[in-house]
Amino acid sequence: MKIYEGKTLDDVIQHACQDLGITPDELTYEIIEEKKVCFLKKL
Image (cartoon, rainbow, N blue to C red; front, top):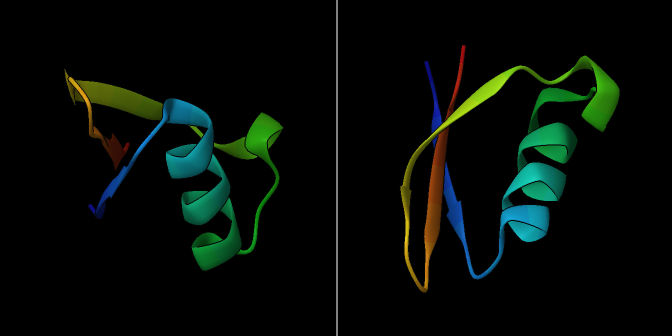
């Protein structure tokens, strides 16, 4: 499981997809905290 963070949810999704080499449609994630900085983990 990896945890990603960024300024917006779109930034986090884009970063995770680039890191994992997949498209946003292939990404399954759970938002664990959403404030000014978003965190998510790959399931």
